[in-house]
Length: 243
Image (tube, rainbow, N blue to C red; front, side, top):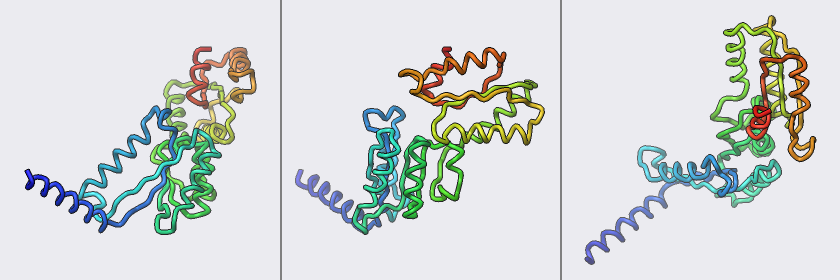
């Protein structure tokens, strides 16, 4: 029995020695609160970090150290998270920032990262606006922007031979308006025969508590809009489709 315990202690000491010889890469991650992380972003990061650190064929001479900050779905808390990461001691300064998931939070965080030249990788930001290298030169996203979907929309419109389309957008800074502008530009460039008969917009929360786009949908109905291109959040989608 003593030999078994001796072997366990030896292996543990050996692992600690290996970890001490590895160069640590400090990373910050902006995430949703753990009890509100429906997509499991933080859990996935924790698993990936553990997997990489325990393998010898991936960054074998390095150890990833990831620290988390909750954004609470707010741009203000996203920026605060970046500033808190920058307060670490110099030998623990972050080299990479991961997140946040939402475009409206990733943008302000990217402006801060650009000032301090910190590489930022978002796992969910899709806004066309974030492709502006002048302001977001340090931001990379591993998901396609909404501009990529516009090419698919044009292909569908062309396939069915539609000539009239309408647009409905939710106002949220430049998140959806930039995608709408990109779509209009693509129509003018590649499908001049297609007419955008109207662009209706609404802002969440300005009409009562729900911000329901009922008036905009009624105007679309009066114009006999049969094909509607929508740019809105997943929370507004249910209201629009049910109407």
